[in-house]
Image (tube, rainbow over all chains, first blue to last red; front, side, top):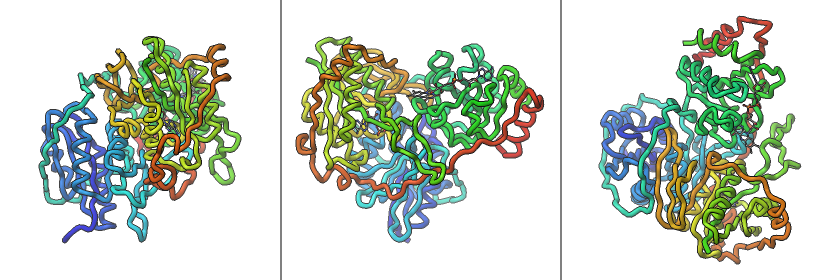
Length: 326
Length: 264
Ligand SMILES: Cc1cc2nc3c(=O)[nH]c(=O)nc-3n(C[C@H](O)[C@H](O)[C@H](O)COP(=O)(O)OP(=O)(O)OC[C@H]3O[C@@H](n4cnc5c(N)ncnc54)[C@H](O)[C@@H]3O)c2cc1C
Ligand SMILES: Nc1ncnc2c1ncn2[C@@H]1O[C@H](COP(=O)(O)O)[C@@H](O)[C@H]1O
């Protein structure tokens, strides 16, 4: 049948598993590919990737999966990954290349853009095809979500974007035939030495990708009281977030901080407990689908953006909520 | 003499950003400029490295309009030794690809260095691409999201890189660029002497020609990406607000609200 164009997904792996953002992007690419008659190729670099995960790529819209397998790819050394990915892009010459806007993608793809001389739009939240030209339209927030910009790459190829996880839905209805191709890892030197990777046990679910986040602020008053937040979060199967004030007080680790100098999140539900909602906090969470605020000060700015605000004492309300939620 | 170079960007202070209620667009006029918050941690770390190593010079660089001079002086007041302003009409409208090229050429003009530091991302563009871009142009390793430096010596660093599930422990030998997070340190307040140094400092302005930049790689023409449209997202409004004192059944109300919305 012959494809006219090609879209590459730069896949991401965690241990032997493929990261969900790779399926999300494969599905989105399949949708875009329909408009421009493109082949969808997902590149997966890692070690001993599960067969079931690879096969799932074809359900989610891939026409071909290219697997680079090497023990050198177990820990994420950007240099080793970059060599394999750059070589792949140079030989395949795709029109578009997409990666997740995860710590992995945000570190690697800017280096790739310089290495292969291509443009890159970071952190997209919408992708489309321009009528007539077939160019990729990349829409992304700037200024902490106060402004949206649509960007395109007229000349250089591939047109590249990193895309926030959980923005696009995984569509498992494609059912393309399984077509897995192996590609050799390119060995080489690196001055980066990966000693080990350490898991943060507190961070059971990470905030950037959680559907529900329960966040605590200075209103909690102490580290011990943060247990209230953890309890409600576990009832809702949610991740735990925090304001900068709570992080600065040492009640919880920085990796939980939401806001301008922390992480930007866009969950389905964000519950702000004892957080005043200063602008620097708001820029990190106001794109949540639903915001719930619990604060004893009826004039707290968080109420200006809360879909459901509760004016009251958190020490009274949060335990009650934990009791009735499951 | 050892050398640390820090990249900073002047950005509008987001806490002062207002949205025009009629047009729903961002009002930028009259909004004060600040040093990008993440870059404050890069400046502080550079000064700490200098204090630890001795015989070290910290140079701070920005590419921007003439007003960006103020940001550089603020960095000097915090302990940086000297600064360079990259300012030229030809740089205007550079995207991250072109910006990182310009900054790498400035490093080339400076010549020798041991450590390069940048912020994790700038709060205007939020791209986080310029740091890794500079390093790649220069052909040196770059580690992003650095939240802990265990040990740093000329030509060596052992650090932690934050990721979604925890952190990696990484070692590098030779020159490198790091992009840093807030957790790394607490930026100092400028001292009186620092402020005097900032006032007195002579800050050279370098143009595209000064750094030997290829005109085809800078500014609008050198940028692979084009902004075709900018628009304001819908403004978020407050909704239901209930006082728990007046209505003790509010936890149940919240639960049914979330159920109705199919969130839980
Ligand atoms: C450059 C810069 C960057 C920043 N980046 C960030 C960032 O990334 N993230 C961030 O969060 N902040 C950031 N900030 C800080 C921000 O401006 C606020 O200071 C911070 O968010 C306040 O945290 P908070 O809401 O927990 O504390 P507070 O503002 O002190 O609010 C505590 C709230 O708890 C309520 N409360 C107290 N007791 C109770 C009770 N018993 N029951 C119910 N409610 C109660 C109070 O009414 C109050 O509204 C930044 C600031 C600057 C200058
Ligand atoms: N114009 C600039 N001049 C100097 N440094 C910059 C400039 N733009 C970005 N940077 C650096 O790159 C980092 C990331 O910026 P960005 O890629 O724009 O999010 C910033 O924190 C700065 O350290």
